[in-house]
Image 1 (cartoon, rainbow, N blue to C red):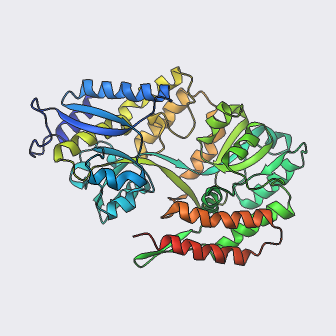
Image 2 (tube, helix red, strand yellow; image 1 turned 45 degrees about the vertical axis):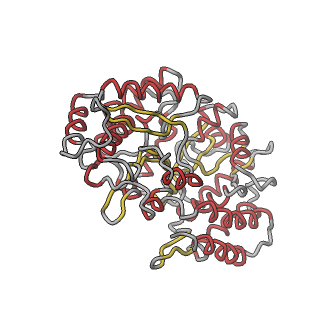
Length: 447
């Protein structure tokens, strides 16, 4: 850690004149933090534990007690009420809104001004942790959906792998040419089971400039039974039944599609960058074969990711200590190079626009983002140029998180995907209307 960062957080977060509640007899503040990888992930756990040790060495006034696991919505309230919730806890980007509404996270507004580089985090991500001008957490990682494609099949089909499709019309054209290669090659594949179909339907809606849910006063309502929704479903229908570019086998889930792509039998599907290592490590793919582009249409994309919030019962001292840990480990441009370098030295993929390592998390703007791009290119172990159009395209896209009560919403939208992909004569209006009723029921539970 640089001297500048040490002084910035050591003084800024530690000299506010608050009481010493939470400190031990020697003045040490002990905080519990979750997010420690399980022992079944030895490399990731070793990195985490090394970071804990280094942080404690450079911050001798703070004792970190790590805990395995992440935030489980099913047990969260019970843990909080029973005093078992960690002082610093991991959240998915879909969690903060409900936690803030229930006052289950500490208000860190008066402390966050002393977090170095807070102003250089992406505004969209910071807003997820903000309500009525008050701040309740920090984003630490982010992913955005894009179009993952097989560069080798593009070349074989006479397509330019350096000029991926930018519209759904171009996707359809590319899918037809790839399918025409024969040998059971599929141009484009889509999920439709286990809530994954609804998840991707949401991404399609965002790419078309639409939404799945919207606020109507103090409540949420469905927002897809409209022209945008019909356009999405009609495009899927036509790709499946008119173009015949989606294969005969349907009711697919992510593993099915990844297996097809890894085997070189699939041209395109919607995915985040973290799919690429899976294709290589689990399905025997090759990094050089894959490219990534923004979602077609250029209007919007579905984002997800993670961040950290602080126990609402935490003392001011623990809040400061927790922010120093989060800032040092996850939001620290001074550690970017060392973080990326040690992953590269262990033959981990470097250059993909996704974390880990923390040094490559897609959360920055301005100087830290420029610094990050330079380092990723310097230490790249994968062909960075294959993903450049994705990186460039994200800058101007509307980035939207998942809808409230997402899994129930996705379950209802699975029916739309299944209906149109398995029945050539499916009634699009009926599919959307039925799903709208179910989604409204799910959204009515959101407080």
